[in-house]
Length: 236
Image 1 (tube, one colour):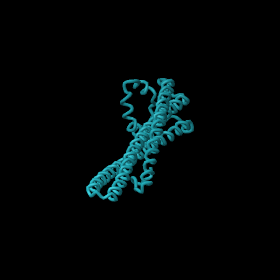
Image 2 (image 1 turned 135 degrees about the vertical axis):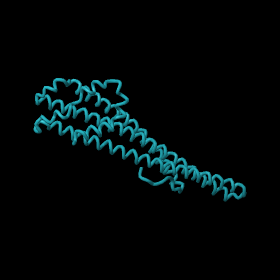
Image 3 (image 1 turned 120 degrees about the vertical axis):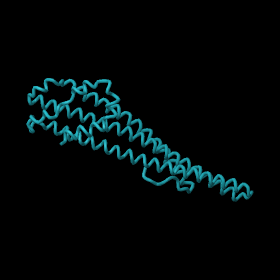
Image 4 (image 1 turned 60 degrees about the vertical axis):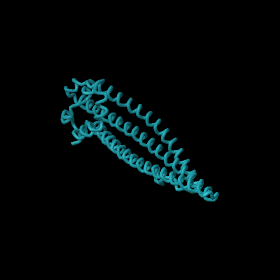
């Protein structure tokens, strides 16, 4: 049944956020909820807004799930980038040792070649390190995006509760008199403010991610200019 599933899914997603604000306003949160069993007495043709709000809630739940998947993918990409960084460091160290060996021979051609290879290895290592930083920023962006999706889910839930209350009131259910319309409006407004805060945070993270990506791509192009392979050629 949608209503019971709504509560299970929403509670699971929002438990962390709920615990952090439990001490400030849990009474108003409780007062801005409808006992959904009461809706059974509301004719279906009067539940249009409720059904629409339920649809919006399901969509918001799906977006939270999608943000989780994207975040997990980004974490795997970071692990790949870190392995590339380790490999680049190892190659750089090997070329450094090769330069020492070339200098020991006293052969200028060997030294010149070893120096060029070390320079290329240095560039590859710098590019690999830049990619790690980019992937770390990408994760921060997706964490901010997940926070936004969770707050959007809270808005959808608040709007559903508000629609349920209005349906009861329109049906002249006396139990609606024990609920406060102002509480429902306040809960929705509070949830919307958190969405706006999350949007600003996400925009800031996106800007930092773009800068980190540009740095990585510039360094990767430099490596390719030296004839090196750079880091792994995964799509950013």
